[in-house]
Image (cartoon, rainbow, N blue to C red; front, side, top):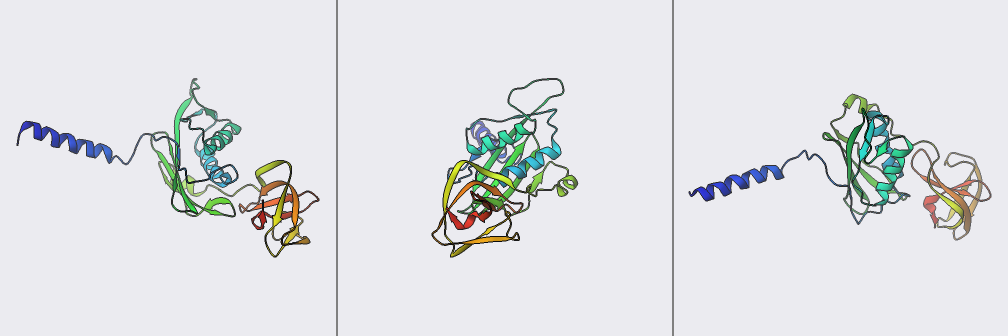
Length: 233
């Protein structure tokens, strides 16, 4: 075998091993074009992520380095990080840790997505979500590498009660699609029944909120709540 051929074989093998590296230092933020991960659908996904960040990273010493893509999901992540005091971008100072952060939202089928995060050099987190009642909700447990497993097992991922999924600045209309739909005193199926609205009737609402189970309710103009999954907006 010629020296040239030996060189080509060695080079090819080396490149093969580089390509199979299962622990990349960083990847670019990416959301598949097939996925509608707008603000009205990403509330639970973002809440899960922020719960992990708060447990392992101090806002006093952590600045996240994010490659800008302009996606709605990116804006949701950045907004929630800033609300909790985390820095974003090129901020320098004594004791400040600049941590690369990226995510990959993968399309699995019409109802399911996988959301993966890569934080710093060693941390990888992944979870599968399923679309239900117009919200992406957890379908699997988390897969996490590089974090204290005991601490992770004790994290509370439950949603705060009545967290707003999206608010309407003016009154909006919706039409009942179920044969009949009850108006409740609170955003809960166990709360007191106030009245019943029949199919085809329209209602005016001022706000859409999410209960602790991740289900959406509309707050009616005249008082009371109705389950959003049985309304056409």
